[in-house]
Image (cartoon, rainbow, N blue to C red):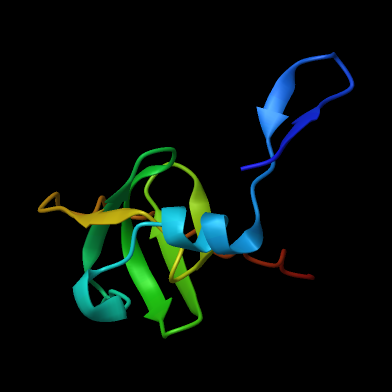
Length: 100
């Protein structure tokens, strides 16, 4: 493996794209986990959320405390969870004042 010095003088190994691809965690058999709509999942940074849409390319999750986020499905590190989704308040529409 080749090494290169960065701008701070530290020597680091050169990582090729094939090394990056092999370093990624994939499911056995090369399959990608695709979650169903409405399933509850947990992500390390954003916490618990509900899957809105999911296909082999993108996964959209509505997190309880952070809103909707889109992930690349094959790179997303998600775990199934059994927490109950909190009730979301729907803002009421403001009534128009009556004209007399």
